[in-house]
Length: 261
View: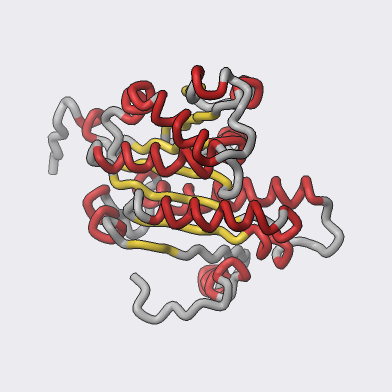
């Protein structure tokens, strides 16, 4: 049997974009580039031009040239929000034609906390299925940063279809005691990468059970908060063992998954 595909088949593939906002978002994008994440367009936005110059994203956007002068926003989420609003036209251009947008950042800083909800809201307004993938700060980062993060997570929750919150503190349960803080932060970047890839691969990588963009939209549209557990295994029975590890992952924070989709 011969199957005829439309000439514009490539154009009909889902357009997936990953938007890293702020310093942590840029770090996550760099990690995705290093890991060879395929089938997605990697974007980055920051108010700190120096950090942005080191980012390996396909498209880098400096936020709020007038608001920040390229020097960052000093950890102030309100200035981060204003910087993103100042660059709204440029952000809209970068989000054009997207079917699925991931917005990733580390909550608790200025640009990411204030700017990520702006990016997410624009993506959703433009018709993209919008998924937020954000982190909650480590305990050693202090109570002020934690309070800023909580407010930012609440704002993000209202700006996306699905929100995935990764508790950084739980990363210590995945690594050896005494691990240096810089390695822990790199581990966070990798968890962000795996979170995005686990969803994007459902569409971009052929498997035994294939999902399309409409399937994903049916599951994640206006779905609220989501959870992620990571499990890996090899050898006989690896699928079942990996699933068990994922369900008992420290990242789940002892939640009950009854009723989850």
